[in-house]
Image 1 (tube, rainbow, N blue to C red):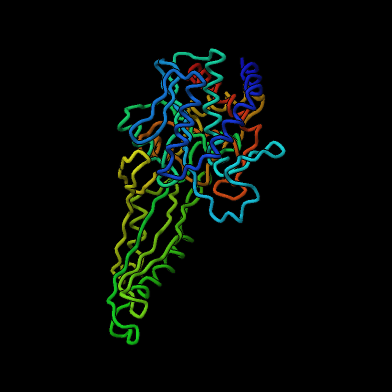
Image 2 (spheres, rainbow, N blue to C red; image 1 turned 180 degrees about the horizontal axis):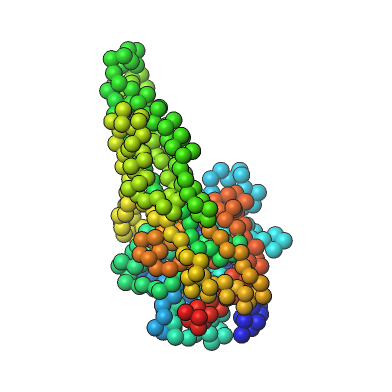
Length: 398
């Protein structure tokens, strides 16, 4: 059967490429995904999915089967913006195909995976691979702005709870089993404004912040971790200040920290490290975790704290074995196992809700957010075959 699946995926190559190019042509930054959701819905319906719905948040959910075992594939539909158009050698919204590579915004992160999971479902229907499972193929929204928010909504409000989820962010066709967590922290100092011609009359909030910036840099050097996921990191991503005018002493300052969390680190431990910095104490600075409450394209706001937990599937877990087994059956070799450097919707699925996850997706994550973003056509074909075969392998082994 695996040979049949792979042959069918190869015959379907031009269809999955056409769909991906359509997706790339539709601009879909976070909270503006309406048009791309409509295109995905139409493709799922054309592929004979049993049911296609768009939930109140704006996620599209295609269902295949109605069996007892519930499995989900996830791909977010939003992308980052283009940035400086001059950095692109191709039109980022044309989906140019050159020498077996598709280029454009979202090709790798992650419309290539979206096209592949939708057409993996198509292969399941065409080849009659349905079994005692229900498969949800999910095109999720707002991930680039707030990873995991979409799945918080799906799990809490749509009341869909799979027993296993495949996160289809780019893995270079490897099998991934986790990544570091992250959180967004703001440190705030207060000053007293006065005329800039006599700064000694006030208290400059920027000067109070300066030693904090240096202490954060030193803290990053002290952070630890373990070999697989790596060490925790912290960096200053932005610094701001306010004052009555540019002829006045700053009366407030704030820095935005990007904090990546190692396996042993938590929200509380990360906050404690910042609050205990000598410079933070000396400045009387406030240290807070930021919140996210931006409406989706459907106008729904689902507030959450910007804390995204680390998750790591054990090497012995049956879900990992099923993912590896699917790959070996299809391609006759053992896949590379690894983890992402960046963060994914797995922070909510497994990090918050404890639902086992693995990762498998076309493309190399190094091209995410770059002006050279790309995905190989061969990856799309192989990924489609893997997505078609995986549910049956998982249910037979687990």
